[in-house]
Length: 177
Image (cartoon, rainbow, N blue to C red; front, side):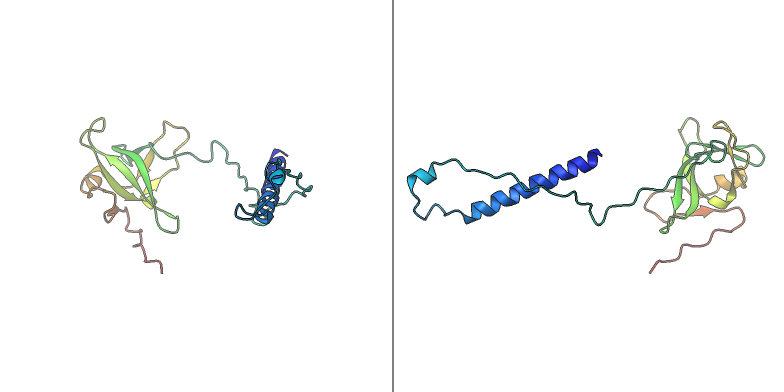
């Protein structure tokens, strides 16, 4: 209701300004002679005509709403990652998507101690297993060994991304034309 009120007020202001500008354009300019009594007379502005609320043609429809149960989905950023053998593999620090918005990989902060000496590596999204996540303390399982992850090249932004996959299931990114 407030939005409609503001819209009506805005339309009324714009209409009033339009009337004032058009009348100013019709008045004689400073170069033409005017009687002194008219030059000193105060300008009168008539109130704008009543307007009907206008709904913009390109108004967006209301967004859809989906409710996901607390036990059905969890965030992954910052989540610990462990190997199938229970080895600490680091934590997820980024999610890599392709141009179409499909999730392709995850960047993991691997190695080091308290962030010192660690490096980011990228693993195929399909190499991650999320089945045992019930709360924030649960970790994600990576189907790679610690030795395989340690041998992976470091991920640096704005350079080609080397993605480490468990079974070679990741397909190369095709150029979008």
